[in-house]
Amino acid sequence: MADVWNDEADVVVVGYGGAGASAAISAHDAGASAVIIEKDSGGGNTRLATNAFVCPINNAAAREHLRILSSGTTTDEIINAFLDWSAKNTEFIKELGGEVLSVTPGPTFAHLAGSETMLRFRVKGPSEERGGASLWNLLSKNVQQRKIRVQQEMPGKKLLRSGDEVIGVEANRDGSSFRIRAYKAVILATGGFEFNEEMKKEYLLGYPIYAYGHSGNRGDGIKLAQDVGADLWHMKSVAAPMGYKFPEYQAAFTMQMPALGYIIVDQHGRRFCNETGLEHYSMWMEVTRFDKETFGFSRIPSYVIFDEQTRLAGPITQIGHGANRSVAWSADNSDEIKRGWIKSAPNLDELARGLGIISPNQLAKTLSAYQGFCKQGNDSEFGRSKETLIEFHGNVYGVSVWPCLLNTQGGPKRNSRGQILNVWGQPIKRLYGAGELGSIWGFQYQSGGNLCECLASGRMAGFNAASEPRKS
Image 1 (tube, rainbow, N blue to C red):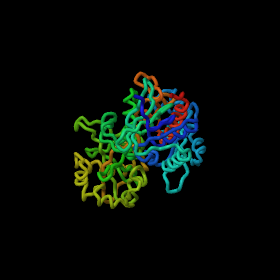
Image 2: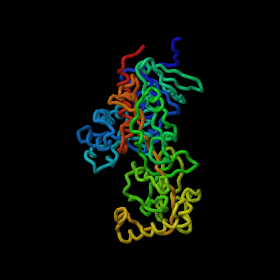
Image 3: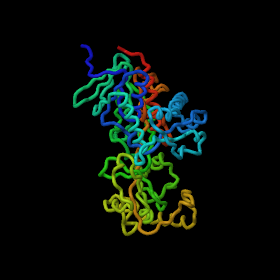
Image 4: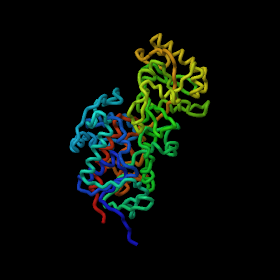
């Protein structure tokens, strides 16, 4: 019986976030017809992103910097291709009719060789609009202008093959199968697995790990690719600051202390780091130490302990960040204290017990030692700088903090053309990947790197998919 198709296009893009939109635009502009299927309404993590994308300088220094950040997990061939495409990100934005603004600081790891090449930009939009929203609005507008069809509320369920070639996608529409023929290629751009608990337990170090972004990121594209024999890479790599998680909300709130009167302690009530020296995106690395005594991760959760002056200095979170951007947070954190999110108590022992610290009497000893360091102007334990050693005054508060994902980076392995590879390192014919799904960021993450990759790898996959010979 002949195959029955419900829709068709040269290129079928699965996932309508920044990478999927860029891929579809690129394929269309290269002369191919494109259709996008999306299980939700679209936008993904791109729409929820806070600020910037990277547009690096494409030179030897940039290649060296990315080699250092990847720590051997990404080949020179792929780094070179990434730079070739990402160095034209601002040019692409301007071609779409957008305006770019420079964002500082640029490099996340400014002390490493070649960091000066990591330039960051954002799309200019209304003053109240975050950079990710401005980027998404520009991309989606261009998808509409090109009359690229977007099938929303249609999750992809299976990649369809003829022999060893991918020829289409089986999706679900209103509970029924919907088959879409791809005459040239399929591009997977479905994001990461931040909200898939089984995958997080399997691939990431430490648990629980929460997430800030799009709740639809559940690893769908990873499963679709695995089903046709794809290899995986960078599965343990993430961008994960610390944040707060409350049962009323599915997504987490980022930790951003408004003043310096705070410390971070583990479940024993002990400090374990220079709190003000943590690199934002790799904070998770500080809390994944396994404690053989408790036989668990004694820093998951950890606890932020702060004083009255810090409480009054402003919200202890970044307003307008992630999926909870519309949630109101009081200016002095008083509403969150009333809700029980932030704990307060008449003394440190009771505060420690309220937080669930294993050794309640240790918290008082830890804070006393910290106060002594402030008076001396020298943190002999963790090297916190003199200007950040601010003594506690007044009431003391605490809140649990967890590693919280901005992005997972793992997924199906790609080559320098964006083709997804099988477990033997060979391209799966007519199958491409883009964006956070199988990202190049295999070890350390550069701020703005995922939006950068949405634009760069999306365009690369779209262009190369459009160049495939049309299969009748």
